[in-house]
Length: 259
Ligand SMILES: NC(=O)c1ccc[n+]([C@@H]2O[C@H](COP(=O)([O-])OP(=O)(O)OC[C@H]3O[C@@H](n4cnc5c(N)ncnc54)[C@H](O)[C@@H]3O)[C@@H](O)[C@H]2O)c1
Image (cartoon, rainbow, N blue to C red; front, side, top):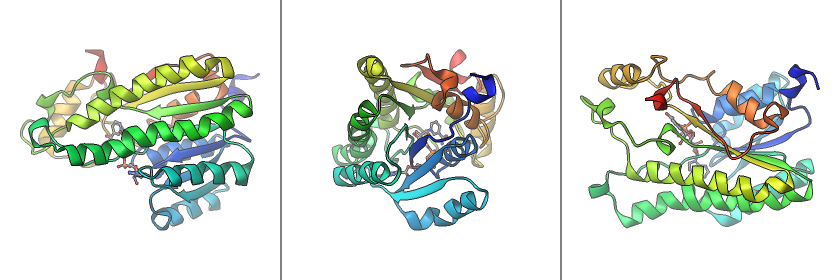
């Protein structure tokens, strides 16, 4: 296979959870531009309808389905609908994230469990629903979007001078996601299912100045992530370009975790 062909995704069916958020949009766009059909699964189809139409106008094979990761029936229905509509499911990107967590002493069991219902239970249920289809079709590709905080603890000094912080659940769940990746990679490798993580650094969204300069100083490449940084890594991990890679956690963080 020629090198440029290794990166093509023509004929591949992908499902991206939270596929129109900060990182979700470039993930969906990268897969679409590489030739995949991408089902963008989001809590509200209304919010992403215009975006999907825009992708389609560019000749890209975008689709949208409603998904609530806190609801097992919704997860089952979406996976079933993708397989019914397209006959298979080749690539699952677990990208969605529920937020709203707190620091240890402010966190409550109720809030912790609400978030875990999406980020932990929803994640495992999504894999559980998709894997039988991938097994049946002789292989597949699961990509979990973790974080620098699934590889190191938060560097709280970057929040100095702001009221920003990092909630406990996030680090806990992202380390769990990396563990789930390694477990599934080893278990399903013999069945041709690859499972990997991509771990981005922080996305630039007009954060307050002290945070930005602290963050940039901590990052060897001197900046936060933008909408292009994820496109190459996602296409690499989703395509034959990474065909001998499984159980890996690819850091896309400008060097944040190199210290
Ligand atoms: N933004 C960052 O700086 C950053 C840094 C590192 C890693 N990440 C990771 O990248 C991924 C995407 O993050 P983002 O910042 O783009 O997020 P975002 O907040 O822009 O989007 C998150 C998406 O998840 C969806 N979602 C939330 N709860 C859901 C539910 N119950 N059911 C279905 N969908 C639900 C939201 O609708 C949204 O589309 C996450 O896994 C996040 O942890 C983000």
